[in-house]
Length: 557
Ligand code: ZN
Image 1 (cartoon, protein in one colour):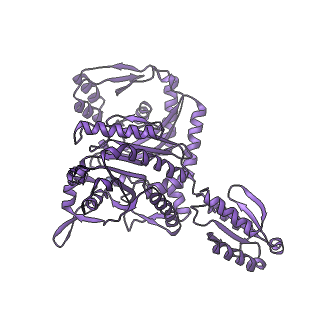
Image 2: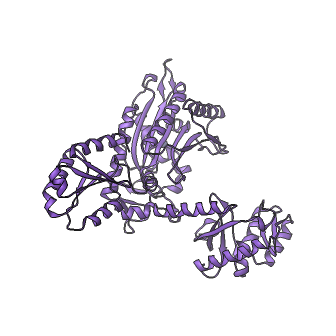
Image 3: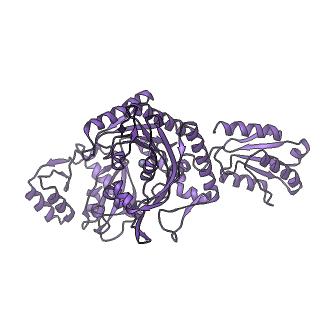
């Protein structure tokens, strides 16, 4: 692609062009903005280069030779990078084009089969907005035509499911510039789904031995010194505000508050484990460029919890959290996932013996829960190892949700202790865990997973009652009232529109059931049932329909 761009735009300079999870990109410095027509031209030029079947030739020049080569080509980003590397780089030549690259490459351009340039976006040299602005072209490539076609179909489907678009169409949430980027307004229908998510979450937590706590949104600056957040998390925190001449900070995490509740009284070994959960709203600074709908925001509510336990309880607690998490995710319709165990990073606090013990506990917990997992070496948090669960949505995309982290650092910083059986003071182990992650992000994933068609138990409106003409209004009103009394979320559509129009609108609003009421239904005292995606289900008595809904709702379908 870079070769093709260079042929069409000889002045273009190249920054970085790595492979990514889905395809590849290149950051390019050119005088004018690329257009979709340019992408087409570049693609055609790429096809030409592919048909030439030019070999890729690797060379390893000295730093000086490489600098001379790229200076001659006026590739200033490349020379900067060679200087930064400070060691002999590798370069690749291909049919008159030369690029700095670690490699490896295919033997020749002829090996490249099916590809497409997907999009253009803005970027900055070294990702820093104070540096030169660049244009990033994304592309994808596959060895088989069917793979490319499948991929493009999936992209189309993902666009249709984009939660930002559905959020607007279904009136679920908005982001308002007058408030600021990354801050979510939950509209009544979105807030209703959130209410159902929270209700289920609370119920499951109580049933699983958790207690709830609530904590403030701000705290004295000193608390964040004690917790260490000002040392290791300050770039994500907002500037302090003064209250009575004391600096206060908005919380980026809930942990210090839970630690202080623990410390508020003497704890005995018999009190442990303590499991405290909070739907805690936190604020974190994120660069505006990385904000994305509900998925990456600046204010969000974590479904947070902290477990304080004795060393001999750690294995069992980890296993409980894993099972609990997988069960709850299943309740929301996610039964496919990947699990990762992240081990000790290069920079860490605490002693290796503790790290090894905690990592072993995570492994034992995973084994106990009989789940498969992969190890992510060195990817743990500096205060302890962790387990991440990434769920797969209906398009097979992965989303990070659950995180379970063992922490020795905070209990030490806050000098936490409990009285052991021996009458001595011992330090508890702390587990941080969020199962859904953040409610904002989880809602975004749910919208895309279900394409906005929430299962009956979550749907803001479950049934739309549609009289065919005004003569059935009275009957329809009775049906609607009976549904409401039965605890069903019914909406009466008595507008003077054609019935076909109302049904189409019910479908685009993704309402699970519609009851169509004409003269026949009035005379036979029953209802005609239409189900989302399935169409006409025939006639039922109203009470039969109510039973049917209740069963489906209880099954969380
Ligand atoms: Zn925490």
